[in-house]
Image 1 (cartoon, rainbow, N blue to C red):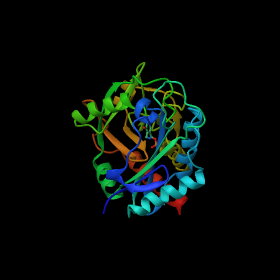
Image 2 (image 1 turned 90 degrees about the vertical axis):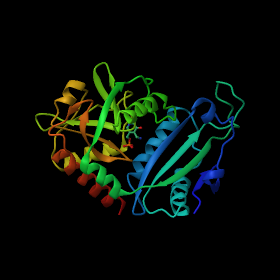
Image 3 (image 1 turned 180 degrees about the horizontal axis):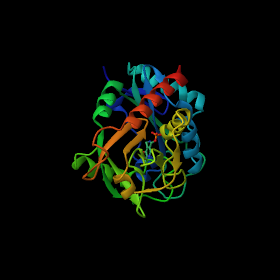
Length: 286
Ligand code: PMP
């Protein structure tokens, strides 16, 4: 069955889906995106993702292409039309199509909206989690507003490519000696005191929706969380390490560069948090 994409009001075969070459997303990366997970027909953390979508659009003064209510319908439809039960839904809005010129085009130009859905298998993710992933480190050369989920991702893809070439699943980004986050995930460690440590929210990281829900799970489990910067040395000395994202849920990190974390196997607290996250999302959705 052909995969289906949503492009500006129409559902079209993915292989034929396209945008105008003067779309400002194509010309300038002038747009925002979200990735939402659907498991067994239910959107996880949907409200959080939609709220961040709105914040990213507002931060860049891009109008909402359609209302949140209409967007939810399209999100459901793109999953249904691809006959998927569990999926990653990608949505992207750009400032629209206009002759290439840096300043914003006038209000007459409508934003563009594109959605796709790809199969997700929770069992595959669980299998990866059972082994854990390796990460490498790379300098954080991104701009100063990475809290906006912009489609401008060159530094992220360069670091992710380096990770892949090194046989690692992610790159943790370093700024002024501190680990900010991964190229497409938030970074966490468990320190010697058994506390969770993760970079505070602000302009230097993307405030993950998974991160937010996991903070709630940690509080319910009475696990202490400290939202503060940690160094690469802190990470290397950590008892456990893991990353969070809609795509990875809670994913154990077992090696950073050449250093094994703990005994080199997924940490027990990490796995408890992964289970708690899955339970929480199922409960909220159901
Ligand atoms: N940081 C970055 C840079 C990301 O791209 C992502 C993935 N969207 C995250 C963190 C995790 O965010 P979320 O938990 O909302 O997927």
